[in-house]
Image (cartoon, rainbow, N blue to C red):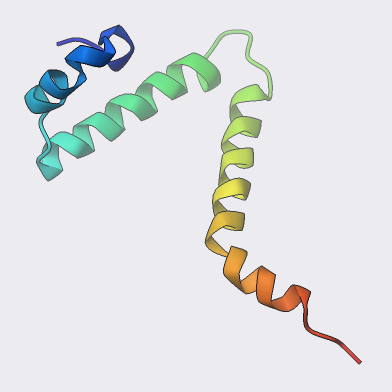
Amino acid sequence: ERRLMDVRLGELPAWLATCDLSPQGLLGGVRKAWNSYYDKYINVKRGGPAGISMLLAGYCLLSYGWNYQHIKCHRWRKYH
């Protein structure tokens, strides 16, 4: 099993064809990605606030993206 970063651009379709795209396989991929993120940024001996702040910043950007249409409509409304 090769990681995505080890796959060359020409080999990408063949690599995608070997991936497990079932719901259980996708859930396993998400779990593996979360464990990798957790081990790299949060569960370290001398960790700082970087892992948590990255997670919080990602949530803020995602929340803004979800609410962008609503925010855009309020920008032009007059409050008087």
